[in-house]
Image 1 (cartoon, rainbow, N blue to C red):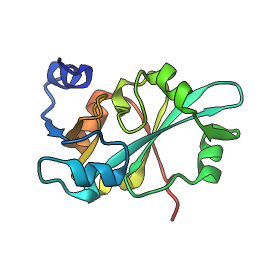
Image 2 (image 1 turned 90 degrees about the horizontal axis):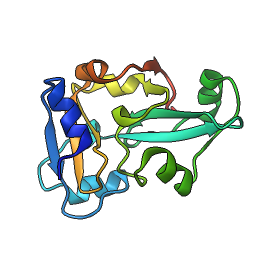
Image 3 (image 1 turned 180 degrees about the vertical axis):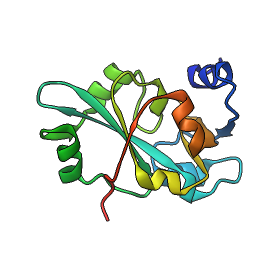
Image 4 (image 1 turned 135 degrees about the vertical axis):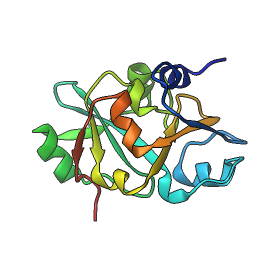
Amino acid sequence: MRLKSVQLLESKKIPYRLIELSQKGISFDDVVKYSKDRINPEEICKTIIVKDKKGNYYAFLLKGKDKINFSKAREIIGEKISIVSYDDLLKKTGTEPGAVCPFLLDFPLFVDKKVFESKKINFGSGDHLYGLEITSADLSKIISFTIWEVAEK
């Protein structure tokens, strides 16, 4: 099986590291615990999918330990949002929580500015048993996004 995310990185000639997990990784703690290789917990990021009342979807990429500040997120979107349900996530992304790859999404992506404090970042690959690591600078070579300060302080 070739991951769609890996194929995209290779097609754009972006260096990456595939991080294999020994068990299904869903949470930040799972990634730290199940990674077969050494990883830096400060480089772990997560993708949170939300939707507004009109049914529009948005993604936020944050550092793994950070929480989304819904007041700031509402300012960005312009209306009230909520985290999508498991079924909505599965239907809209084709993946379960913990496996979402930020650059395989077809809706707006907002990246918290703290993500760029790390030279390298890692995140979901589309498969629970693998994560991807790239340089934070390479993210803009893969997908367009807007940088905001959206993590809670």
